[in-house]
View 1 (cartoon, helix red, strand yellow):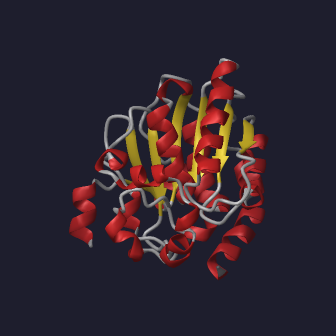
View 2 (cartoon, one colour):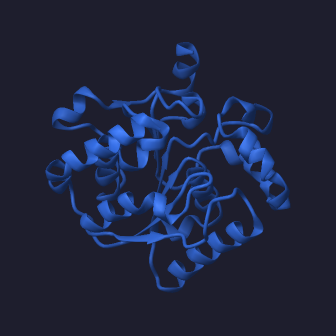
Length: 248
């Protein structure tokens, strides 16, 4: 948590730098909070996205208690509202919110421009969940979870999406194993390593710079991320999951 506070101070100091980042085209960006978080936890991230010209949208589903029927049905309804208006939305999901973002990317591919995850351990199987520092709390709330929750831990749920996907992670995450936050790098999927903590990724100025670059791409013209300027010294593109296993 102390590191996250430091990243929030860094965000405040970096506002002039953030103001120079690419602006967007006004398309909606749905922001999903992490486990036990609510829309207050993503307020800084949504403020930043609004400043860059996007329609940053909170999920308005209360606290993220895991895959309850209320949350799963509510997220589907959000995507359906975007589709009814003819909008293709991007989704930024933090931690468990990123796992939910991938669920939406799989079930509503035509309504979604891109998915960005922040420290999201989507590669964990049900048997591996004790590797995270949130596993006890997650299990304590499991009685509230939908019978559909088991779909989040299948091989299909961990497979690459058909929409452009950027997985932002930190090796110093501190909450979830960083190797669980990466996918097969290539085609329309990339893994981007930034310095920082799990609890600070939503206001980490380096992560925000990557998010701004990714969202600013024209719809249907996705290209892999290439760090520019000072970011070349602190942002790493990759690794392939096989390389991650070798580094373990």
